[in-house]
Amino acid sequence: MMMSALWVVLMLLGVTPWRSIHCLEVKQEKRLLVAMTLVPHADCRLIDAVCLDGSPPAYHLHEGLGSGARNWLLQFEGGGWCNDVASCAARSKTRRGSTRYMNKLEVFSGILSNDSTANPDFYDWNRVKLRYCDGASFGGDSEFLNSTTALYFRGQRIWKAIVLDLLPKGLIQADKVLLSGCSAGGLATFLHCDDLTRFVPETATVKCISDAGFFLDVRDVSGQYTIRSFFSSLVSLQVRFLLLFVLSLTFRFAKLDVVPQGVQKNLNPNCTSSYGLFAYQCFFPQHALSYIRTPYFILNSAYDVYQQFHHIFVPPSADPRGRWYSCKLNPMACSPIQIAILQGFRNEMLEALESFEGSQNGGLFINSCFTHCQSELQEAWFGPSSPRLHNKTIAEVVGDWYFGRGMAKEVDCPYPCDSTCDDLIPSNQGREVPSTTPLRICTIGCPLFVICLLLPLMII
Image (cartoon, rainbow, N blue to C red; front, side, top):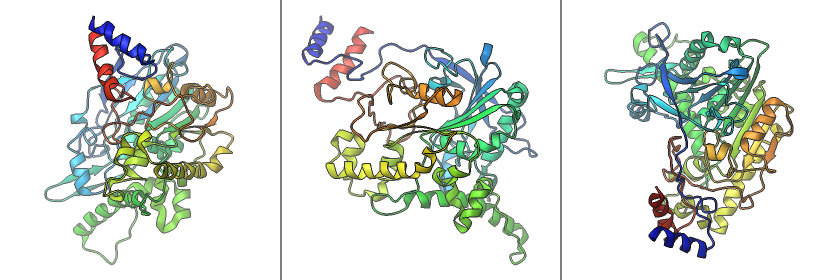
């Protein structure tokens, strides 16, 4: 009876319970759980491909079948960065810095799904998720050691160790390869896209896609280059401490020949030579992109909430009085001035991508949804309520680009014109939402929110 009454209330308000207000998903999707594989012998001293805490690296592999058995999709996991000893030490005691704390089973959905109706182009490929535990987008190669702390910045070695472990499992005979990643993992694709071609047959088709990884080198709302300073310290961290460690052993200060051993060493050499003393800026995708030779696809929101609201455009340091608090929680609460400022961020992104738009082999899907990471979320990747540009889902545009089926450069109109967006701002303040999260945030408030919560529970 009560359930019927709630339905009546919803209908009187002109609301269709799930499609229109995007409430809780009542049906639990059939989930594909894939077991973790630890890379054997990676932690031996000769290889030394280890996480921040010294634990071995890991990945999850779901094997392909049929016509996709010789095709490979490698997906970098995301999860932010650390840029000093304190933050990296703290990170080493979490799943972001150690395989000891990671889930041993991962949900594969979206671009990793094995369901042809949910992932039509890549469902039967070998799909691999590379676990992230180095704090620098799989980029560093050094360590920090003192009497109390040991930190291993071995992202570059982790990347190589995983690829080498996959070669005898079929990667060495690959016909088609797609390197992808989300957020910090999306940035990792910029660092390793060209490098991947060294490991696979010359005849293989290799392409790369970055999801929510196009981090902009721009000023925040207070006029400071907050993210530039952060990335600079991240890159220099892994050079500086290796150097200091060597100095402490040799005491030959005057004769020491300084050679970068950290992240900077693994940045694109053509880019770093162009930027000279500011070579760390090649960690920014917008500066590295023009030097990448492998075909590339950029999937990003022009209003990426991780970038705009939490780390680049409106970081806490730029908003000490909390004037952006309500806007961060709900774009509909943003003032006209704040919306105008956010449109400026969008313009900065499109300007940074202007030359890439003219590339023959490149692809784009830049929508106007307030979101972060879309390729592993099934409802964003491919489904009845997925975001669309020119009536095409992300999966369709990416597929058209990879297989050369048609137009693959889509740029959305400015917010709030796109009616296909959910505009769901993560409640965890910009940290990536786990792919196992079974709930979707309601986009309406007041009494309807309570109804939205209660109704599915009664049906279940």
